[in-house]
Length: 108
Image (cartoon, rainbow, N blue to C red; front, side, top):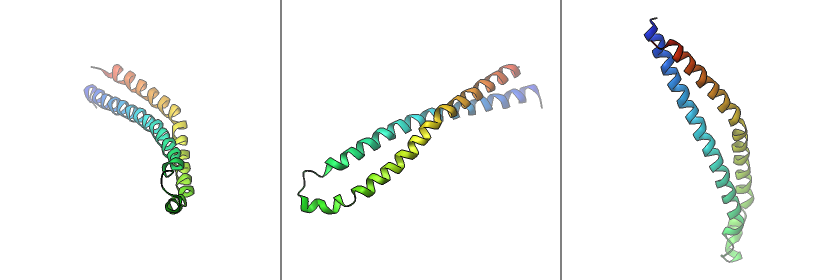
């Protein structure tokens, strides 16, 4: 493999590594936004139907527990993912630095 080919391969690996880091950063932002959205939605379940007469609320109220449990399951998954992100981002940042060093070393 020629030096130019090796450099090109290293450079494209670097580009992919930076793109993956960007994706992880955006995913982290999504997780934070999703936690806030879930909290808001869960809070409005209790207060959302207050203005309608009780006889009409019965059917809607009967689903509250199921919806809150589903929100809890989703929140647990989002929290689990969020807790993993610092390590994943640190590993990806290290990989980007390694790719940058390799591309610099192979630069023609």
